[in-house]
Image 1 (cartoon, one colour):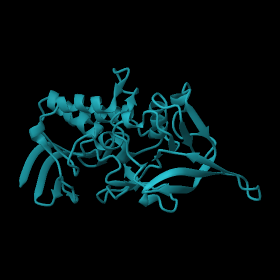
Image 2 (tube, one colour; image 1 turned 135 degrees about the horizontal axis):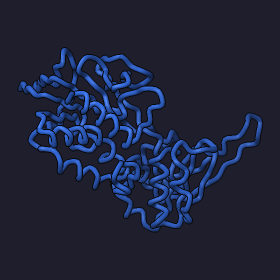
Image 3 (tube, rainbow, N blue to C red; image 1 turned 90 degrees about the vertical axis):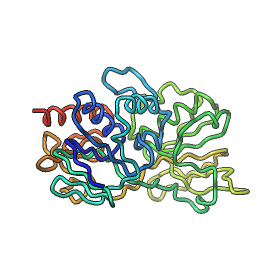
Length: 299
């Protein structure tokens, strides 16, 4: 199958969907391509119940509702799922039997295909109650929950779960969080353990019953362990991303762009995949990048 269009967007996460909305409103022909079997990217896959508070013009919205809002502004006949891009060359996208030729290509693949980083303890893969993704929180009501991680998602999980359970533990290996600590400022049912790392788990009948954590102390200090009884262990150590730079020049782990988010010629990158000085990987900056690129392709 060969498709010709004005704009080909690779990636149907929030950035790709937002860019498709811009095209739809301006009646610019476009295609939206994604390797997954559903739109929404990491928001849909990892934290659909997360509250988003940094979208211009929207004070607060649940992640899945924001994705639904974006989908409503897109012509679904222009979305091609289960279409993994293998190569981009001369403004042509090659994805197996699918080929798209476009005047402009927008890379909005986020962090690409990824798998969760494990907790890193023995017998972890034998326990069905050690989870790495959350699509809902209600099943954790009144449960004993240990959350590992220090980024925004781990803090969001802690905030939401502590609303429905009075036995929630947040464990992070550093003395400071990577995410915004204001998120958990008023959480009354949350016990915070800093700096601690996982040490071991006890398990029975395929489920973890407790996790032992070890305090991170200077070398030579006596070992300090703490045992936490659990119904569930939630691991939010991020993901190991597959290569999704399509051979373009990289800056660190991401695609290098100029001040206009241009990769080369008429190829641009927006959202988590692109990198520049002081880049912040949040939805609001991604929206600003999309707006900037869209103005460029219109001029």
